[in-house]
Length: 415
Image (cartoon, rainbow, N blue to C red):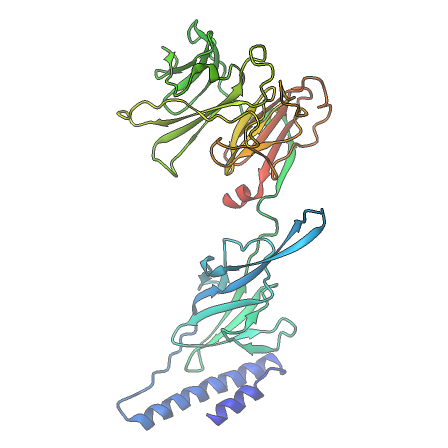
């Protein structure tokens, strides 16, 4: 064993690559010989087996540090250090091309210069790593050491017989942008997603068509009642409400529907926002928000509309804005609007609001913002908003401009 210790010290690599490889091979053979000798000393019944296969068969990371920028209460920039366990990030081992990598990138700001690695090899092969500074320099792999993965690293594996050898390129991928970064780009008018046309011909009692879920259609009647059709608009009836109909919005209406398959199979969530009459309620400062859960099973009981009300001074209510518009995007519902109405004094299209609890509470968004829309500061600007699987869309009636917004987390999801 003294020989082994001396060989390890003398092998610390400051020699050319081919000579180093020969020394490593010699050491592997020597280790195998020592193993055989120890086996023989214990008795003839214990025989050591040497293998020629050289492969890494598992690879994972340990606890890592992450550094992100933030702004203090005084407005100063600050760096926040956090730690997380990275063992949940799967590393793929491509045995054909001898590559090891993670497809799910580590969070933005992860320190990849100090990475603890746990790996295993086929039949306990020996692993060394090529130095970043010198290509002809190798260091022993040690699970207690951290490794610099700021660049891809080369790992070499030797089989226990000293003959088999494999070389792997290991890459640790990290997101280069923060997950909640949102950005806009301008598009052509024809790129804006189209919506179903208003169904003014669906009955004389229908004043405004609002939208549809998978099995129902919704509209506002001439006497400002919520109507539902389950036969594609052939017939309409008043929908069920859990609250007095006087709380229904009658203007600046916007309705969206989306699937709730992550919570309930074959179920739609319907969200309606809008304002009550400015003539009847001139000083009101908050919008009216209603929701309906629709179980699309043929034999399920019919759902009803639920009013999600707030006190007028609630800090989490949706403000009463002209031309209220909502869209489901990413992990929330986004709301925009023009000038504040009644007791609401918001500037037109200055702030986007978002709800991360299906419309129960609303807060000014720290992620979403308006692009630089030219000539927007008119008395009655009008912006339409919609979304699709990947993007948030805006269309300005004043200028005809169309903008497409993207959140990085959505981009990563569909990469």
